[in-house]
Image (tube, one colour):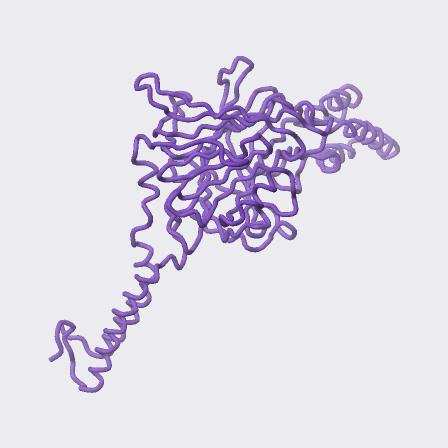
Length: 457
């Protein structure tokens, strides 16, 4: 096939333009295959200074051995240069009149609750009253509301404000084979310093399972998921939560009794809880700052030492270098995804072929006092870049007096496909091939003859 010099130039340009696409199709690390393929992984485990440590051929996991506030750190066992961190910050009660996911503008504090009830439910009804009594009735209603709001707790329960107890780890064996299936351990919030949150003591748990064998769990015939060997699954469990909006029920009853003609209805169930988690990544030399962090020495935290560049949230890249928490609000995550109906937040590093991830299913279980499942609720989520780390809010709708249980997973996988994920060696090969074509173009210009790309005539 003969190509003139313009054709050669066009071919060279096209080749250069497709370099990134070709690079992205090159094989990545085998972390995904290793995580999903083996049925069983040998696990080394035991105390490691202030940490407890699990290690497999794929993933190494550490967490505070003395309880403390819960935090997980893990890395690819063959390369500890990047350590992935999930740090549990606390719980935030928020309102869902406008949004189903957490947004700081709608925290369930007394000021925001008063504003929403007054503007959305009370004021629209005042037009029904005669002008001479309108302001008097309005003031009576607001005064009664303010009196009720004085008894509300803060919308934010910080996990650092309490003491956590660690139970385990204990091996759990397969009944049939006798082999260890996973190691079980629990973080339980056992003491809270703030009196307003005493109701949360022993009612918040993070129940963990580190798997030695790939396992499919089936809570019921309609819900199942697989946890691979070498991954950690943790159940966030919360019971007997005292909802601020529930405390307004007596105010709603008073309204109905004393102002029936206004017909004011306030749905007190328009509220939810957000589990606030920080995602960060540090270098191995920064483990000392993580140690100080879990021990309550806040001069250095994992967030201040974080080198995280970005995250792939359901395959959409989100840079986290800039701190958006002052000028922007939380962004909603489309929870359902192609990951077998899971949402995945994956650490994205341009220099590396493997990365950590956190993922969760889009539903949570509601349990009664006997531990039986009575219902499932939809899970939402939001996030915001916070300066070298990501703030993630996993959001649960109002669940009354039931116990809520939700089960995220962390592990190691191949790095997400983000721009410029090209190895230097492969780039050199591509550039070399392009130079060869360019030389051919020069030869054509000198000889002013058409050429055959197989051989010059």
